[in-house]
Image (cartoon, rainbow, N blue to C red; front, top):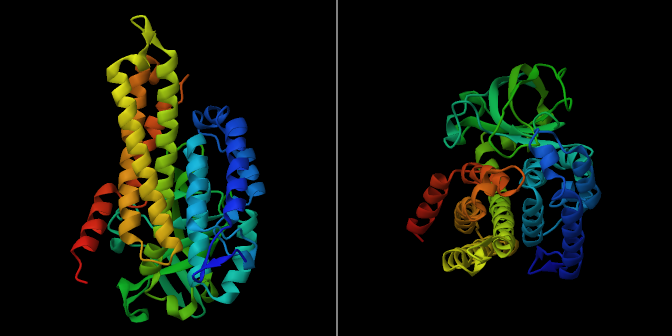
Length: 397
């Protein structure tokens, strides 16, 4: 087990730095030069995913007792930041997987942990998280997917949207509503761990209804999934009988990890945008000198660097609070709000500094510009983050 600080698991700083150095070298050599080969045609980066598995990233936050790296939140945020600097979609491949794993490790029974976590830690078994529906996004409590009990089984019917990794996943953390008589709280929303065949049909009533074509965040699948009379055994109910009606509360708890992840992604994309803008501004000449020497561009770079550093500090503070065992809804909400908006602003700034070249696929800034809006929307929109933040600020002590 990693070392403890005040009873909280912490990653050794030397090990973390060594891991981040190796990851950075890989991103520079294998990701940045080749990302467009997969991103533009929307092709899944199979080899990159396997290399991430070799790094142990599919087990990044899974407890070491089950074969994971059990990284602390600070180290995990740095990992996600570095992956996103290279190509944000890589961070998405492991985020949905690790939210599923977080639910199992935090709320699952010992039998459930032993059944799924060891193979999830190696990446041999991929997971995904399934909450949103066609008519239920930010209003998660309005979901319509139903789970009805039939003896020792549950029958699932409904449609889920925006399922990242839904096609390649072998397990799905699925939120569904149980009948009134089965629950006492949270509107009956309950989490089930669905087992399916990765990459295809034939999973007993589960189908990939369609693959969603996206503006950005390409290269990994985002799908709509349909469930028609899909049967689950009772032991696939997360946490056993205690889990009935607690699914939404547990999911929102796990999403705090997701919000720190999205904030770190924002920092990574913002860093990539700033790096591209700075490099281009030093090389591109106009009116007899590099454009970086023109005050308008120099001041814009100064603003970009300041916003980037502020986003990073907010993200690291949220991660630090999580590692200290403190409540993080406010810090994670602030980090996610500011970092995602900053990524979008800096991507546009970088495109403007590139001029016409920024509109060309020959330069990566157009990808940053297309990827950034996802972070404003995913894991709770900016408006939802403002709601979370304001409620925390106005709550009675």
